[in-house]
Image 1 (spheres, rainbow, N blue to C red):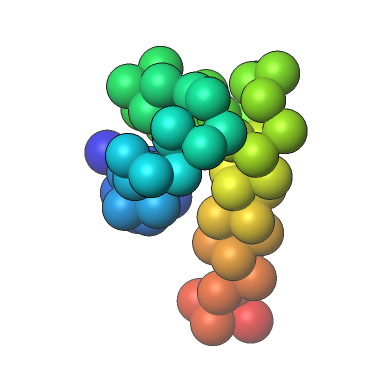
Image 2: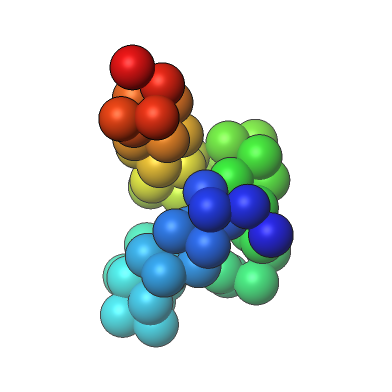
Length: 59
């Protein structure tokens, strides 16, 4: 599991998933979430991907 995928799992919560109607178990990786039809799921994945790409390691 990549650091991105670990971040994704930390973001998912029961309250968030019940409000935005998604099943966190359907999105085990950032790549899966980026393919989602759910705008919230995709936005979270894009944020995580953007943070990972712009980390200090890439400077």
